[in-house]
Length: 138
Image 1: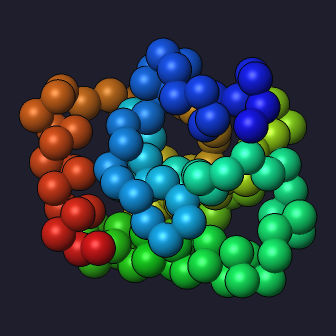
Image 2: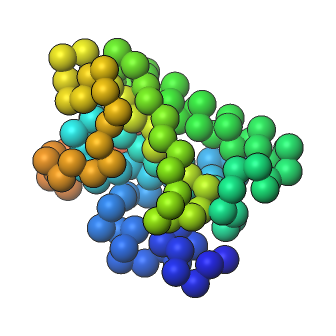
């Protein structure tokens, strides 16, 4: 565990960015609060590891199954034109993937998605509706 890691500490920093949807095999699925890309989620490994290749082969396989399951749920729930994956960690060095649905004629179609465009936030009820659709598709 890293003292400064938002995924390990689960403090207000993570609460400001995401809503926990639930536990998967070896990770936690979060709904990203900024919803320019409807259904955007983060799949965060449950243990602190800085690099994906530091994981055992078994843990790598289980983690990628979690990422694939999350993407499949997003596709089923929201029918995006394509799903993008982002594995960045310069400022949050904890294994986590952004699973970002992209919609034709939507924001950043054909381009790299912006990490946090800060444009689309939902009401509590709307967040719950998105979460319920994802849970039903999992």
